[in-house]
Length: 259
Length: 74
Image (tube, rainbow over all chains, first blue to last red; front, top):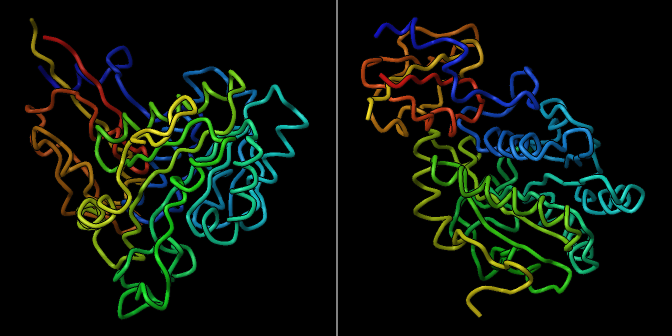
């Protein structure tokens, strides 16, 4: 069969969702942000809530998320996305509100906002993309940087003794009573993309049923910050990030798993 | 049970040549081109189009969402 006979509109099985704009993504080649953006938009399209969803973009690489997501978006000051989302959700309780944050935003400067929004049990979704580094500003050490991991501000590796331990933010907030669902996923392989999408769908379904706060962490790569090729950075992530940040659901239906 | 035949269409100018689709293709269809696009990146293309089953794994992992997948059962 000729390729021209296969490439016809009626045979199309997958293409980018229409909720992603046609702007070229500003991310580095191989960055997980693009995939994470797309699966969030796919979930919103499949649930048919595009006109009722308000996203909050963070400060960081994904500060321009509103250029790529074709829904109503706003952009918060550094780390304050959960606070802004709280305000939006309280004004419009019927709208779906989500924040999309990186680890420098959510786990460093925004720790207070994150923890208190989680503790209040605001009925929002937090998408937390964790790549263990400050990507946009040039690969500085973040609270989530692994022990021994090199960054531009820890060139000999993070010394746990003086610089502290990497913070497991999702496990931390899962202990708070306001959090209904917490999960950690990745988007570097097709199977992981499917699981991550399922978790994000679950998070939005929880919001629909007014269950409380849902947080989905996506462990991602930062090949520029880690100074690696994209494929190599994904292998490094599997070998080093996943043992410390194990994938899977952490809290489902208000019950912490494995306890 | 018919056999699935697939094909992909890559938006060449938006492809950044990250190689992630190449390593995630289960039938080794995709390669990166020797030529580069307008931004200087090599782009993904079907090196072995006869092996493509239209599984859409490449499109699922593509960070830039530049791959469209087509499939027919023959």
